Image (tube, rainbow, N blue to C red; front, top):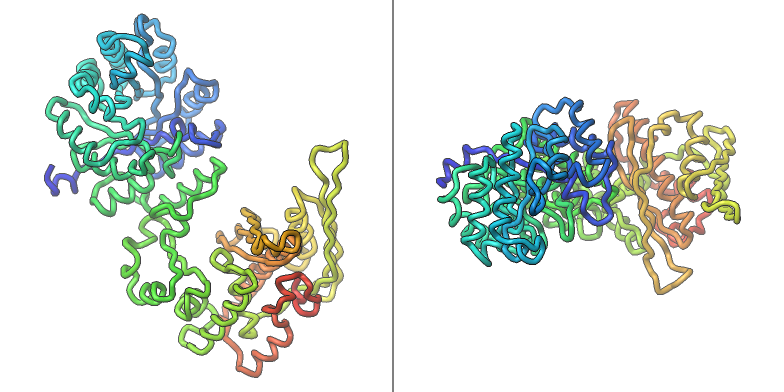
Amino acid sequence: MTRKKQQTDRVELYDTTLRDGAQALNVSFSLPDKLLIAQRLDELGVAYVEGGYPLSNARDAAFFEEARHLGLKHAQVVAFGMTRRKGVRAEKDEGMAALLGAETRTITIVGKTWDLHVRNVLQTTEKENLAMIADSVRFGARQGREVIYDAEHFFDGYAANPEYALKTLLAAQEAGAVCLVLCDTNGGTLPEQVASCIEAVRPHLSVKLGIHTHNDAGLAVANTLAAVRHGVTHVQGTINGIGERCGNADLTTIAANLALKMNTRVLADGGLERLTEVSRYVYELANLVPDDTQPYVGQAAFAHKGGMHVHAVRRVARSYEHVEPDKVGNTRRVLISELSGASGVAEKIGRKLDIAHDKALQRRLLRRLQEYEDLGYVFESAEASFELLCRRELGLYHAFWELGHWRAVALKSARHDVPDTEVIVKLRVNGTPEHRVSDGHGPVDAMANALVRALKPHYPNVAHIRLIDYKVRVINPREATAARVRVTIEFRDEQNHTLFGTVGVSENIIEASWLALADGFEYKLINDEEQARKVPPRAKSPRKRQAGKRATGKRATGKRATGKRSADKRAAT
């Protein structure tokens, strides 16, 4: 295939997240989950959405009923099934009946290619297997269905017996299949093997070729791209590469590579810019922790930490970024740490706090950052806490409340499986005492609820804050029960449609949680206040900065980390 032809062809994406992806460890989609994901995939512009095997469970059967009413614009819903059983006519086979009963325009039938499977798994003859393939495809085609044939274990089968592997493809083609999908089911094939197999069988075939790869050798994406280079125009995979064992080919990576590196049309207009959004949406519904280092869509995909990197990216973005982040709906992140240097501080907070050109202030803030990191703080995922640290140092901070006290109580009784948790918070807000009690799903949730109740009468916008992630890590485990813990919390501001993170460190896990919570609420309030004024903050004069510093306290002391600070050292908590 010439390069020019590659660039003008369209590759259709076939998503099997709802079937193959659901076979991943710890993944189970509800019926509403499956319907919601199908809609998101359609919005991307995926050509096919495989809904599952209608005979396997009631949920998959119900999906096909409900999917008829989704009004999808780009995607065809596909029902998946196997060839007829040995010795049973296709029209009498229960699996074939269920496949047609799904009432999808397109069906996918999987059959055996590897003679090892034919003899030892199906325990039938090579001739009967060919008849099973042909009868099943022909039956589906005669019922008016577009039939896609998945040649399971094709590459292993071709390596073992190339003549028989080709016969299985020809049987499906002659029976009416519109697409033959070559499957690397065990995931152990190398890209050059994929290429040579496709080149060997293509001259014998007249219908569209597809590829379905697994990631057991870490090569699912590479094998898929190799297949496309050698003429394949139908690509199967899952969002985020979830799937059995080591997973399937990741369609987010494949779509981005095909569109941005191989100049191939794969998604609807605007679909590429939604890749990151859809990736995170599927992670959330699957209840999986996102892979930060995932290409294109991961949080670290365009994250820069080293000072030299940050400095270079500020001048020429492509010096350390192979594509522009917004092309796939992602964003550049500058990670703040002792490695980031003054350039990192300038990139992160320079414009917002009006210190973009003040090298002395940038270095001063970097020293302050390093002091905190020595105490166990990490600001890479806690940008809100870093901004508050800078504001205190620059005199651009004021307290929104004074802490009286907080108290957390957990009660476990024989009558209840789950402990009851209650938190009491006593604050003074704008001169008014606020004494609130709340329960929740654990002390952190209860503490957040109590804080909202105390602040809402004075600052109604706090009702828009949601806690969406909470992590704890022991910093110095050798200290055993006296070890410090670091708590990071991720918030969603539903009013401003933003995400931000905070961090707290203490020997007491509840206090560390409180410090991170308080930072989150303060960050929301101080930014809302400035947005309402529409006046950019400016660093105060050195004298005023020192006054602000005395008023808010030196937070980089050991007391900040051990939880022994007095209330007057940080009135806001």
